[in-house]
Length: 369
Image (cartoon, rainbow, N blue to C red; front, side):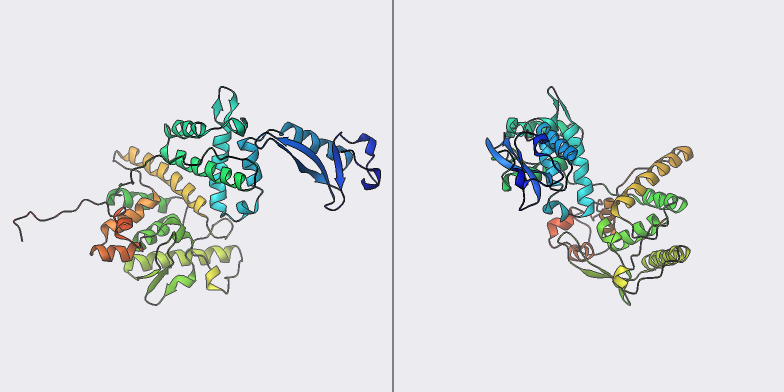
C-alpha cells in the first residue's frame, strides 16, 4: 500500500521510503504489514512515530524485517513493555529479567533457545527445557517455567500466538526445605554481620527471628509499626497481621536500628519524614533510602562468604543458612502449642505452619509421665 503524497509529513520524500509502508495520520505514525508465522495472518504494525526522520524510518523498517519471526525472545521483550509488566513489583521484574536472560541464552543445536520460532515450540519443547534446567536447579527451573507460562499466556491473550505450548506443563516437585539454623551458626553469622560493612544485617536478622518475619516483611518495617505493647507486623502472602510484644532482644535490635538510621539521616542532612509510614527502619548508609530485598540478599551472600572464610581460619564448622531459615528457626524455637506457633508465624492453617516447625522434638517415653 504505497503512501499518498498528501498523507506524508512535509519533511519526508515519499520516493525514498521503503516499499510497503504508509503514514497513518490518525495516529501520527508509520505503519506496514507483516506476516506473523504464529498466526499465519498479515497484520498492520506500527513502525515508528510520524516525527521520525527518513533514516529512522529505514532503521525501524529493517529492524522489523529482521524480527519478523515471532520468538520467545521477541514475545518476552514485548511483554516487558506492557501494562501487565508495569504492574509487577520491582523485585519480580528483576527476577523475571534474570529468567529472560537464562531462557534466551540457553543453547540448542539450532542456536539460542530464545531465538527459535515460537511456531516450532510444542509442549515437549517446554518440558525438555524444564528438565534440562532442573539438572542444575529445580527451584530455578520452576521460576523460569513460571515466567515462560506468564509470557506465553499473555501472548495468547493478546493474539500474538494461537496456542500456548506451556499449557499444562507442571512444575518440578520440590521437597519443602527443612533446614534448622543451629544456634552456633546463627550467632556466628550475627557476629560476622556486626563486623561487616552492612550495619542493618544483624538487627534485621534479630528482629526477623524474634517476630518470625519473612524478608519482605522485615524490609517493610516503618515507625508506623511501633506500638507501646510491641511491633505490629503486617502479614504478606496471605498471612495474618499481628502484634509481637516487646522483649529485651527485640527492643534492643529495634532501638539500635533507629539510632543508626538517625545517624545516617543526620550525616546526609535528610529530614525525618513526617509520615511514620515513610520512616523505614532499614535504610542505605550510602544514600539514606529504604533498603531493598535484593540489597539484603546480596549483603547476606557476602557476609556468608566472610563467615565461611573466618570459620576456616579458626578451624570451626559453619553451616550456611538462608534468611528464610531464620523464620523456620523462630517457629521451631517458639515455646508454646501449635496454636501459639501459628500466632507467631501468622499462617492461616496448621499445614502452612508445620513447614516451618522443623526442629527435632525431645519427647517423653511412653511409660514416663
